[in-house]
Length: 434
Image 1 (tube, rainbow, N blue to C red):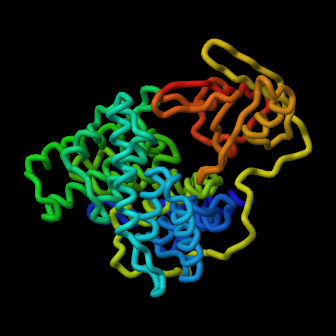
Image 2: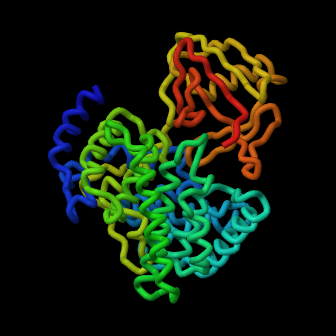
Image 3: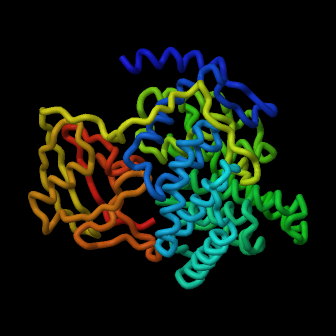
């Protein structure tokens, strides 16, 4: 019933997307904002929207001008408290995202954020990323997505960074843009946003540097945009459904680097709206990353000195008890094959779980059956639970190793807590390099 109600609305939306600036930016018409309510509900009511993981949600909803002051203050308090309590343990990207969220716009009186202190700490974490690259064959402590977030936040909030170093790091041919030899679209998109900010700081005179570097930045951006567009699917997605939002932002701000016939913004919006109606964005971070582009916004619209815009009557932003992000399971059972693969060793087991179970349920059942072969640990993140160790073996960025999830031999873009398994699936957790 839900799909039959929403799909006609999506059909109407195809005719109501508003092109702006000669189609460099397109956004959903205000009269059809209700189609975005599933995203907003997921962000506000998910059990994963808490602590530092609320930063993505706060940033997205502030850019869209969706929250009321009370909701905004609650999210700000969560993020600010998490930053204050966990500064040393936050990754550079987590801190960068928190700064972007807290400083997305000028909030109500009484909320005081010490941006200079946070930016200084971020600068130190960024330097640690660079040092790790020098010591470990070009590998950052985290990844290039977080490194680009760092640069974007330092640029927008007047932090210290070397433009020549940024140009060197964000070279489009770096191995860090690739995952299993495939270009990572969201990583490339974040680098484009960071480079755009740096370029603007040069052309506006904020950074006094030889303008010859502008040519190199232009070349970097043109190459990255070409790589992003090379991952465009026939249905309009850019990479996959989860990378499309930030890829759209990158294309919004870089229309000088591609021909208009290379990307149909309306087509991309249409498939995204269809995916929303079908429940694709169950995780708050996924919803948060797609919403700004649908409203014609980018992370470059962040301005801590510009007054926030508050709640629109076009949205349903009621708060309820935190909702589960996984579908309800039934009483009927299905069987799947589950394997752990480390180098050339393969250990597998047939597992029976309830129909509608997710990958994590299968792993938990296998662990109960044989903890020696199938033990694992998870941590919570803004994307839901993710695997940290299997049989005590932990992923390591310096070695570029991680635990890869596969179903029927294909890499999964969904997480362990959201991928719904099916009868007869051949599920695999593989110790892999990237």
